Length: 141
Length: 411
Image (cartoon, rainbow over all chains, first blue to last red; front, side):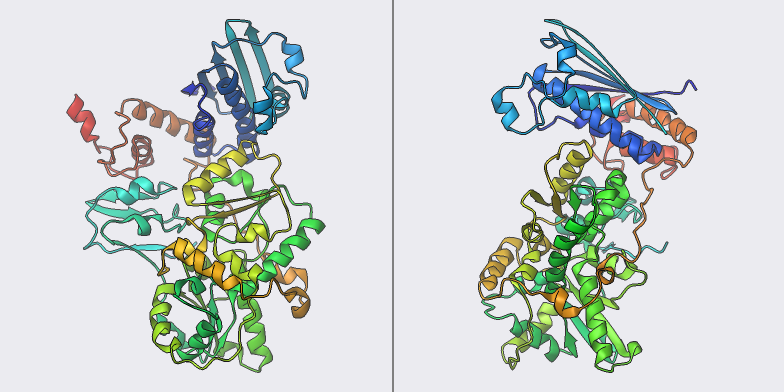
């Protein structure tokens, strides 16, 4: 199956009001394609988490979504400060968020573990000072 | 499935301006041949187009008052929001006795159904393993919105009849107990909004509609005003603070027995909340009350009064009412009596095709057309956005030679 729908988004940094816009557009597209509800929800939760991370930590970046008949692949790439220790960041409860942000109740510390939980594949590459690239895949049932 | 119309157009008044089309939350409106036209399968009856039309060309659909004459025994079901329409109302019994005066044989307050709903929500919360947060299903426009657009959230829906259906069931039972033959009984809801008209005539969550007609609050208001001044006051009301509070946003949630609740009103705000829930953001909330109209039911487009004035009046009326009644114990019905008789079905109005490969092909075509459009979303083509125009083209809703006037202009 070579057919693919390619979507691109700019994710604005430090703009909490527009955070989630890319995720919403992906959801709308999946709805148009008649993708099963549980799959839409999985990619929604994982992608929103990755998108909001980019808003909080990296002053925004770019997101792309490639939708195939049997799966969706999302790549979020930023040029922010990067993650020092990915293994540590993957641990549930670990967070760099300031007390202010934690106090806002974003569920800080569960971001990356949550993405892993809801996706079929999750890859993360990061270089300190250069940025972070996140890859998500959800297979359609 | 027959879809009763939610809103109707007065073609003589419609100027073909794009106000309603641009603000419709489900992109259900197009402008064709200079007039607004509704794709009813997408319409959730929220009433935004009625509210926004600068030419009063959009009208809510409801039954004429005279429909009550078709039945020998006529029962009125006044919505809690109705009490907020009258200036200086000191006692809701003026309204109830007034309803008897203008032709009804019995009155059953929907506020009592609401009081019961609050009691039931508390019980069901403890007994059943609902998917949290639980979403209220009292506002029919919201219920329809979820069935049309937020399929993933269906497991969160509170599977309880709306206060008006509960009131209708109990009112019919009372009439039967009084020896009235079933075929003589006509039940009429006095509604603040077109969404309720549509939902009740269609019957959402019930096997068969319990209500025989849905009247407009403003039309009934005009009938009530003259008689209320002279009406003889008999004590009829059994309204509680818990019941009347449902008239405005937050009233239901405040009585759901959970501290961690959220109440949102106004269709655009509601969509933001539903998106947030879908994206896994609302982790600590247990109950969500959503109303399509700003202010809640007092904001319905078939009301007379500005929602904020009506809300203030209801707050004033509350001071004279008992906090709550134990209607559940008094009525003695089982829990099943109040639950959905039938789970409403999801509506597939956005899928481009039931076959995924066909849907993919269509979507790729849409993306290709969309990429070449100016993205001004000007509405001149008769679609609410450039994307909607591309979708309409691919879906064959508009002729294949339809043009974007800006694109031609730019080229």
